[in-house]
Amino acid sequence: MSYYDTPTKLLHKGMALTVSVQIVLSFFMQYPKPNVTRDPLALQLFEAHEWVGIAAALIVIAHVVYSLISTGNASWRTLFPWLTGAGCCKLLGELKQVGSWFSKGLPHPDEQHTLASTIHGAGLLLVLFQGLTGGCLFLGMGENGAMSAGIKEVKEMHEVAGMLIIAYLVLHVAAAIWHQKQGHDVISRIK
Image (tube, rainbow, N blue to C red):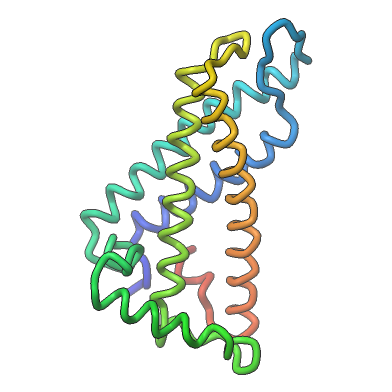
């Protein structure tokens, strides 16, 4: 039996694809600004960012909902262990060992996975937050880019969350590579 079930693998692939496309689009698009003429390509990229963002938001919402009904390795108890007393104790125990990773290497995922699961859950919450702020922008920003003061604050949060997601993805991939180099075949679990 596979470590992750098929719905979890599909949701992970969908999130990886849509979030990666969103990041690439964000580097080249321009959001509308009142009384500023935009480059037609930048406008099309912004519109693509909006639609791919809607798809990403739907996928992450589906992932959260699935974690609520799943009993496997993608359940809410696995992704958010700090919500239970036992999970919190396991998480604290694993956090105490982080310093030894650099001398002894990463623990095998079959032996310790609470911290990794917590990080996956945090990534899921971060992408959910990004989707919610993006949805607010989609509904609250005028076609010409006009925004209320509140929507401007949401835009700032959306941009900061985007930078955090880029950092998360870099570290996520780096951790997967580190595990693979130590002989922990973590990639085959999710593909």
